[in-house]
Length: 238
Image (cartoon, rainbow, N blue to C red):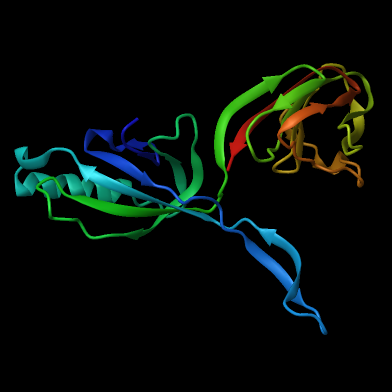
């Protein structure tokens, strides 16, 4: 891909793109001043929104009239405005996309060359990129990427009072209600939501349940109260 895809629009028909990528993520520290000692005590850090700058280069060059270049630019203006945020795919980042991306800064068109170029700043309010979707029906699975991800677990219930999924650290999600054999239970760990046959069943989630994330690496999950299960997740990358 030589251009960007944003909010479902592939800009490669009109422009090529160059990513001006930051060297890494800058963290926002949380600190507390401590009397009697220099500096402050570090309490932790937050991962702020990520700003990605992209230079767009109009491809048509001198073959276009001034009016045609203007029309193309106005099409691009419309495509690049997504007030609710949108998904962004960038050149040089195959298989990755950023979500909740909004154009928050834009340069003037550079008139040094006939085709023209400009720079757009995309603020990705979800600062971690999404990669390939994975699925496993095994008890042990390996999560790729460089950042933790949230699974979606689907279980086919046995007749009984509960279903449960737990990880090797002792964290678990337990749903208590009267299940019929074949009930389809879906646990969305990111949304902290549970449905049974498509109907909200969050009221049945036990108080001590934890909707846990899966860090990159190997995990062993234990399932009870079900005859089959599937775990789905999307690899996430810094």
